[in-house]
Amino acid sequence: MERLLIVDDNEDIRKQLKWGLGKEFDVILAGDGEEGISSFNKHQPKVVTLDLGLPPHEDGTEEGLRCLEDILRHAPRTKVIVITGNDEKNIALRAIQIGAYDYFQKPIDINELKVIISRAFHLCNIEEENSRLQIALDHKNIGMGGIIGQCPQMLQVFSMIEKVATSDAAIFLTGESGTGKELVARAIHAKSLRSNAPFIPINCGAIPENLLESELFGFEKGAFTGAHARVQGKVEYAHKGTLFLDEIGELPATLQVKLLRFLQEKVMQRVGGREDIIADTRIISATNIDIAKAIQESTFREDLYYRIAVITINLPPLRERSDDIMLLANLFLKRFSEEFNKKVRGFSSTALELLESYEWPGNVRELENKVQRAVIMSDSVLLEPDDLGFAEKTTLQKITSAEGITLKDARDRVEREMILSAIKSQGGNIAKAAEILGISRPTLYDLVKKHGL
Image 1: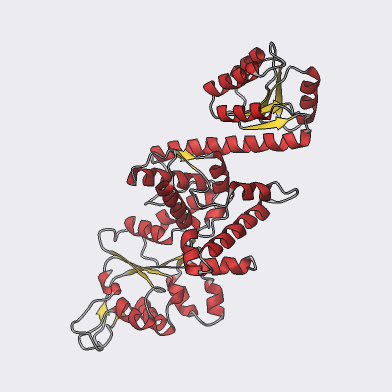
Image 2: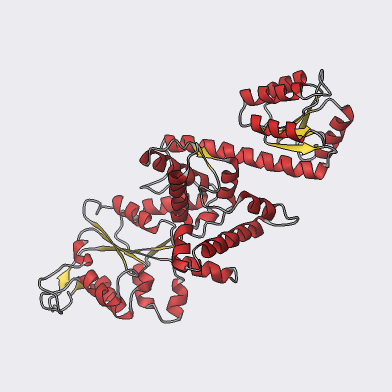
């Protein structure tokens, strides 16, 4: 149970708060500033409610503000919620400037105050985790081969990389765009017995169909107009090493047949050639499409699938890696602050909450994009939501304050607001909207469809 300190000179209010909050929190009571500081030093609560009108100046706020400054001087991350009278709003704002987390006006509504206190504890826990992850990053004791993660799903991925790396089995990587499939492929290669030979990546969806065969298998001189010399393909370049076929689900049917023959016999022919060429090449492939659906619709060969997917590793989307979001955000912040020589040292409390609650449709790639943009654009030591390209704070507060709303609903609404804002700002240009959101155009089309826009 979280520990909450209540500092108030009114005994009836102390009893009311003890009764109303005692089931959710471990409540400690103090009747004046001196007792409040003593209790704070003894129990070190994360959250404090503080009445500003404390003796010996019950009609003023000097003692309350002094108590606030003392608490924050010893523990700057403490969330202090000041309690004020209806005519003390300017004093409350002064307390916010000193460092108070929030203020609450009398008369006290227990249910409303409980929401503010719960949110304060939640933010404290995020900040503690953020600090712990920063320490872990500084010691570089988490991750593998450039892949950072500590959630159970990623630890399972790391374990599989260790197990499969030294074999020559064909590996099939699945996962949404931006989840780090190429990083995993490189990590497998780096830990394999082929690590001294080339790692050759090729994106099957980024090369026109009429050029892809030549890119993969090479061509002989005179094979077609412009073929003035023999050229090796990626399969040959990866001899004794690893060929990474990204987006293999986009491979045309004719090339699927040719790739299948190579996997079965380890021989290939260049375009325009008749000579069989042996290539000792390990294949790692990846896709973000539903491969089972592609097989069912006959757009991907089932026999090829069984050849490329001896072992399948699925990479989880970032939204399912809650333990890793702040870990990665801090890593990118540190990297880009050094790269751009900016004195950015962290995220504001609102930015932290948004990073944790956002759905991340573009996954790690989107997170990296947002932090890079924020570091470049920010003139402050703390990154704010606007720097990260998030919706205005007021929009989020309006969304999350709605009664009975679930976390998923809130995430969906923020996502929808951001998509609408991006598309509107770019005059309906989907490509440009996707670029400022840090996601691919197909991903944005999927989200537009998801939200019925």
